[in-house]
Image (cartoon, rainbow, N blue to C red; front, side, top):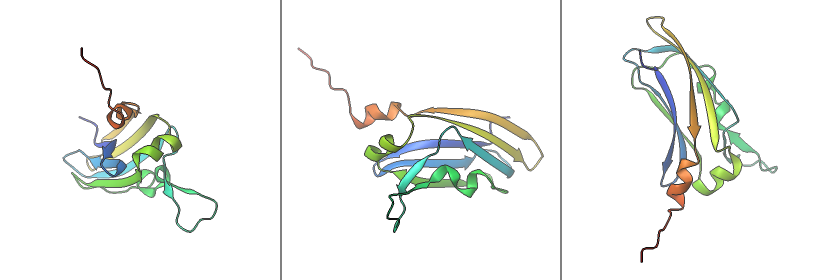
Length: 128
């Protein structure tokens, strides 16, 4: 069986997003994810200390009890320039998921986010 839940980072025109999706053909009845480092997002409005939201602490990663097949959660993290200043460029995610048929999966996804830096700053080669 393929991994039932995926967590991916997407670079869009407005910045970085985390996308969580149930890829299984049946509901996921339990899902947790732990990150190798915190994923910091936008500044918390009204906080004079410059605190940022911590997307990796959202309950969907620690207490998700039910996800229908195809269910997708998308979280805006931060614009592309700020993202790399406040977050690690390599992030490991450990996932545990249990499907409705009681199949338990444990796996790790390693994201090398440095690949996106080249998209932000294209390499220009001179030709003679």
